[in-house]
Image 1 (cartoon, rainbow, N blue to C red):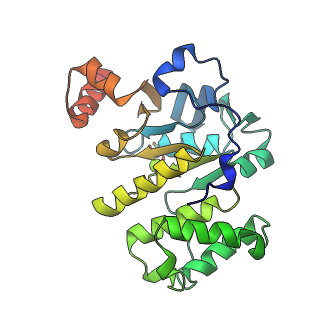
Image 2: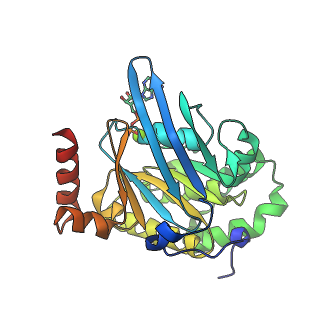
Length: 266
Ligand SMILES: Nc1ncnc2c1ncn2[C@@H]1O[C@H](COP(=O)(O)OP(=O)(O)O)[C@@H](O)[C@H]1O
Ligand SMILES: [Mg+2]
């Protein structure tokens, strides 16, 4: 498989463990990021940085503030306080540049059920102002990589849940983003398709992409380089899965999660 066009990797990818003495500027950074809705503080003073080439997972119970966090990083929602930068741009002031650098796959990504796989991809290419002839080579490469080539003439409404998610992922990649933001990308997808989806993510990261995702699946959090644990709007931990296991003395991530949430509540 040829390398993807977003491989313009200007900096070497540091091992995530080496972050403390990493001299590179963070690729995704939040400083005191806060968002209130009336009396609710959905995201509360979050500080966080992610290096280029990382797979970072935001984990937390429903209502923890994951989606709100993601929407601010994508420039879709202004923070009440604090600031965020992605790929060198301010998320609330440089929204056009942010849109060019990121791919955002919302929790309910808008696919057109009566359009085919190919037509959905062309529709999204058009939204990004890309000509069909220009995206054709990348489209073919993505269809091959996701093993969706045989289904390109199938209506999106007739795809399985796993295939729909792969199609949504392909649609978010057509404009060559440098960072992918995925909001619970494998929610409701069967375990085999979920593993398939992760294999694709690893290949994209090997080709230079940075991935920031939210998940409610604990086994999925373990596949990330680092995990941020959110609870009631606060980032209560941010570390490698192994470090979180060591801290809690737990072997299974489910127990790690319960222990950390429990101690935050206490
Ligand atoms: N647009 C909104 N208006 C009012 N409250 C909201 C809005 N979006 C999110 N919230 C509230 O903010 C909190 C965090 O929500 P959300 O970011 O969706 O969490 P998560 O994605 O972790 O489930 C919840 O209490 C939710 O009800
Ligand atoms: Mg959410």
